[in-house]
Amino acid sequence: MTAQATIEVKELTSALGAEIRGLDLSAPLSDTDTTAIRQAWLDHQVLVFRDQHLTDAQLTDFSRHFGDLDSVPGWEPFSPAGHPNVLIISNVQKDGATIGVLGDGEASWHTDMSYLDQPPPGSLLYSLEVPETGGDTCFMSMYAALDALPPDLRRAIEGRLLNHDSSHDSAGNLRSNHTAFEDVSTAPGARHPIIRIHPETGRPALFLGRRLHAWVVGETVEASDTLLDQVWEHCTREEFTYRHRWQAGDLLMWDNRCTMHRRDPFDAQARRIMHRTQLKGDAAVEAATLA
Ligand code: OGA
Ligand code: MN
Picture 1 (cartoon, rainbow, N blue to C red):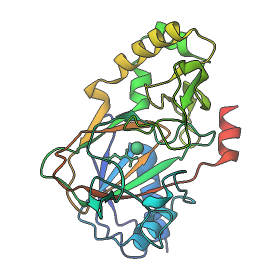
Picture 2 (cartoon, rainbow, N blue to C red; picture 1 turned 180 degrees about the vertical axis):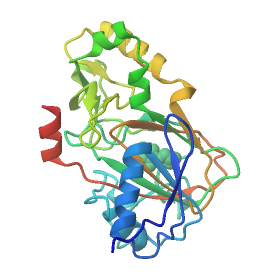
Picture 3 (tube, helix red, strand yellow; picture 1 turned 45 degrees about the vertical axis):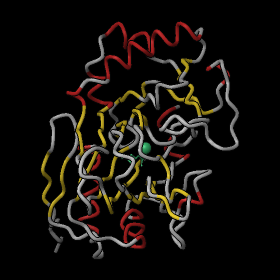
């Protein structure tokens, strides 16, 4: 007898996002529910699970159902002891140092680690403490943004590669072990097609990484900036987005191949603590689908 999936999928916006109800993620997950979650993730791009109570080990176990995990180069010191695949995102200070990354400022629109040749297919973010206001995270459907792109703009970027700068984080800070540069055409990082085919859904999506220090390979910096400004102006429309207002105990799981996300700033005196895992990019999948 085939077990029935126990989950309920409630769509959050027409562009993207679904809340998954009926699951306690601290308990072992059945194969049927794993398959149903994976399908909902592919269908809705961002999944929201509310009212969870997860230890770092449980967060790691749940995340592993969807692939191998990875850590973020340079941010290893911000993992809880004994949990190298969990990264702390926080502004909270302890003994004069911040316990996590990204501070309290805005994190501008980005895709996680698109500056790698094999970017992570997805990330999971679990909230332990959140401010009363501020610190919302917004997600954008890059399928919807591409579908609505004016045809002339689409033609201008079709077949083009974008260089994704690896030297700055999503808060705009220069990463350690990187040097500042003036000319974006010299930025280190990875080059990806601006329009990529999602390896699992087969749907084309815009893949922009982040605006800052991006460069359309082969263009003058000026022409590249003009083109990217047009594309970004078109994309950053509310109709392509879902805004998540956090409560403690929320777990979000996003598909990094067809979404971008950004975070609102929040009061520096407030406490925000999130624990995050990240799925590992798959070289074989990238090579097979993006050649
Ligand atoms: C991330 C991220 C935003 C947030 O974890 O990749 O961008 O809301 N976080 O903390
Ligand atoms: Mn991010």
